[in-house]
Image (cartoon, rainbow, N blue to C red; front, side, top):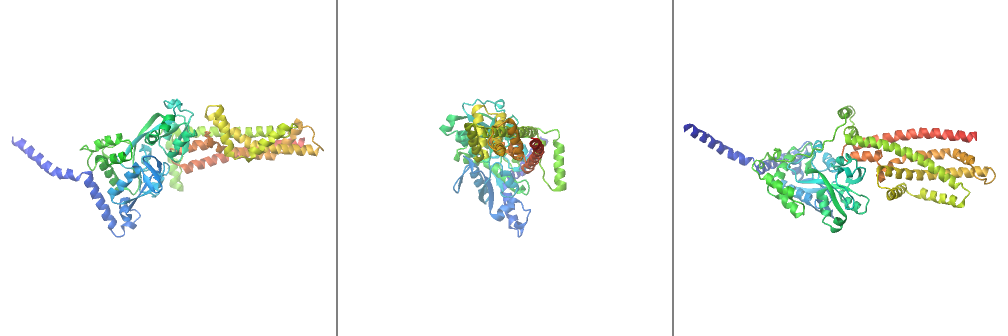
Length: 555
């Protein structure tokens, strides 16, 4: 009995001393202590002028917090004049109020929300950003997460799309910076990129986009419109991902800790849930999270670090290439020895590598096709403009004038529209349309040069003799310099084919930068590639010009 009484006495003493400790470990008490500490630090003379001051302390130095939000994302972040509304905006206001500072909002989008944190343009971003493992190396996510969604593919009801196998070789409209872009391209789809999600429904309506991919929470607003629902539906969803408020990786330890505790309290007390209901946002995830954060084991100052309480980041690690480690080592060496932050994502992940390889092949096909089409149309239009037939001659001249007067992009778009009206969309159709457009634009100019040379030769003979193959050959030789210049111009103009979704290298690298870092390095590599291609084309065209000029001398 004495042993039992002794054990009970020990347990009673432990409970007595543990109770106050448990009370001090609540997230509310931990947050209050942290904020008092930051305010005291900000009050120290000279503290606010220090360059390495934690951003939480700096908030109390300035009295404000800079928050990046979206302006074109219905229900979550929109702007009408000077008024900002939406779930994300109200979450930002509530967090600022809890911190005791004034919120100062600025616009971000999917592509800019991380760079603006890194550049110290904002203190935190609340911008529908999914927390995936890849982004953990770029920002510090606040846990617990404040929302959750998945990416959904939306398109016309008449279009039969059921799973990944149905989207191969199709173009899907997306926004730059979405983590799900990598998964889309890994299944053989092409991307048409936009800066803002808000334009996607309009591009679906005007049929520029046959499919669009975006968060289901975004499209939820548009599916409340009967006219939109009558035409479009959700095909399938993927990549269930928690959304995170995020701060910069460096200099934010105290700020991140404070926001972690605030998010935890907001879930526990139903603050997130209240804000969501006021903004007519789906609440299923928030209701489940409220139950989690009311559990005793989670409702502690360290609950936001407990794997049993917080959600894991979406595993978005892409399959590496066999040379990924060596490429990463080379990037590190370059930065260490030259200060150049070189990024080569196309050599480090398989989706990016496959896009890169296909882009190079398609670009070479496009260049070769544009050269052949330019030469072919030049010969045809030159012959027609030299014809004795009034109808043929003036038809060719009118066509040449129209082509010479039309913007290149407009000719490209019309060519693509005609091609898509005749054939189902595919990469080959897009490349073919671009080849025809580039060939017509440059071939019309070269054909006019041939016709003018033909006119000169006929005049030199004292009159307009009947055109012959021999005379036409001499006209082609005489206009060699002009023909070569337009061939080179056709080669240099091939990157514009990306405008209509042709999967050449510019389009491929744009897709890569939509889900990988290193935009400056990527486009620098593109410039090097096209410079090399044009140099080769110039060399070959020089050989062609010399051959044509020799024929002229021989003749």
